Length: 366
Image (cartoon, rainbow, N blue to C red; front, side):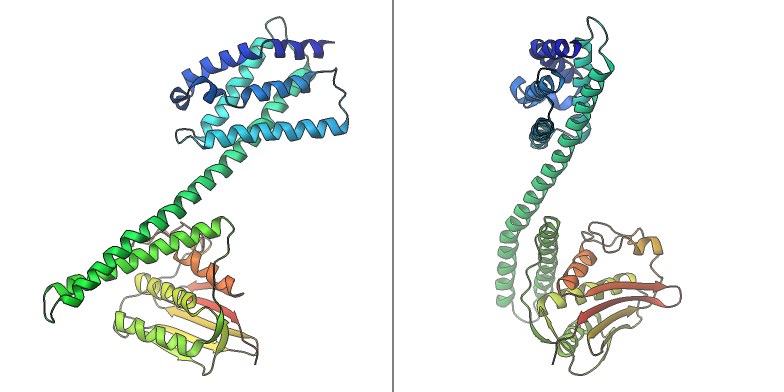
């Protein structure tokens, strides 16, 4: 009946255990000093009650009962993790350390009159470990949800003042006379605002993708040959005729022209940034019976193999980017946009051969 005595002793000393745990937590867990007793303890008394049931031999341990206890234990652990994630001063390390302290206090109290049986210790240790896993998993999930909500809110809120600044600058530009020295300043401001707006859109789209929400694409029948030609003309206006287009005629697919432009402009900007200066950047548009291939090639130093492996990951940038600015989202979003078109985006890079980004898209049936 030792197991029953342990269960009873745990139940009788539950409040004392929580008091001892709180005293140690306040002394050893820095985040705890900012919270009142009830907030600090939150779901832990519920956990002790659950542990009392697990230790009791008076409750028949049928398979159904074991499943029910596991579900309830998981719920309590997740509740603790969710509540801790809501406090900005708590970290995962501190959350886990709280359970470490709780385990020490439980054993300290229950073994005052003698050591526990091996089975009892195993039950307590297994229960604590499961609670830590459940709490840590929910902590990470809740923290990610909070971060995503913050990101979405931030990007939406930033859009309003950015639009105000852009409209105001455009109004000033229209009122300036030709030859005015301030015209160039106003044009540069608008260009900088457009880049900022693009970065905000990248953050918003990345947040959507991280939460499992697909990109919103408005697909239509596209003449890709004409679309790519227009994009290259715009790029050449900006980058002084660095881009060369080699294209089949009448290349048609189903796409979002706005998003495909976004992909090509991102790849083209990267080619300018990281490719050999003053060398041509070639876009080659070809088609087969079922596939459309668009390859953007630039000369210059190759991308290392280890860098290629992380090239399309979000917030990851290669070590040789120097002082180039950006979120590290461009290629991640480019790949996501292409895949949303049921296509693929890959990179090939080697010494003496330059770097090629290859987009494969399905061809629109005749």
